[in-house]
Image (cartoon, rainbow, N blue to C red):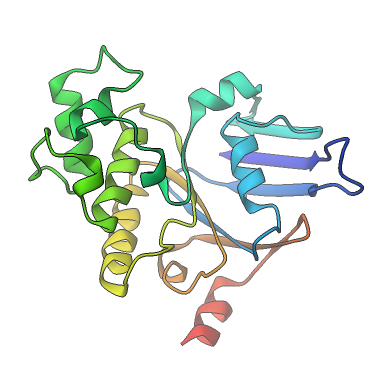
Length: 218
């Protein structure tokens, strides 16, 4: 179980806190969905949970144990918005091995099969893949690390309706084995597979009724 208790992020240079007393609970094998406009603090929250930024105050716990930024880096795997912009490998194989020279061929095979890319040649360039395939590869890069928590920033952004549907089906499959926390400004494609939902507005997190929100979106 992931717990956030009174989480605050208030950099000294900002007149007000970017995140204000965030409280959140997310059980294993659930998908949490945070909906908010650009500038609401969504990406900042993910960066804190991934150990890339340090909270000002409050508690972040996993299974009742409070975690440091270093421990959060081991717990979570963050897939950035437009992750294809961060690809560095000249091939799919190189991309998966970056920072993990000890990864075995079997682990690589399992990771790309998990995201539905097992049919691709490992020597193919990541930049030659379709947008949907690139998002899947970015997920595989994180899965190969075996995190407990997958953090996704606007995973459907920039994809056409067909690729969005494929990605949603993939996330539905992945939450059978991982805990997922997704942030987005457009929740329409993701409501049907989310277990818990919140809105984030000017750093304030509030619980939302996913059933009502989905009914209003139809």
